[in-house]
Length: 67
Image (cartoon, rainbow, N blue to C red; front, side, top):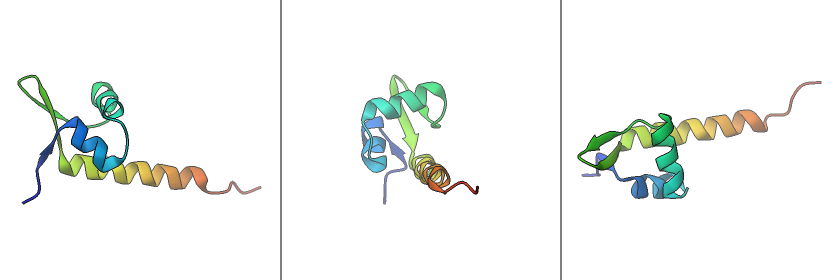
């Protein structure tokens, strides 16, 4: 069974960014998370949805603008 909750380091590896970027997204509320004591854990489904949204946003910004 895959992990349901990921550390910021694991989430960063999945998305392909530095862990500090994941922590920034958590801090600003862009990436849903839970705290277990002092530990931050991010639901794997939230990481997948967040990565999907990043891809969709990148595709939208690459579309040529009509003249």
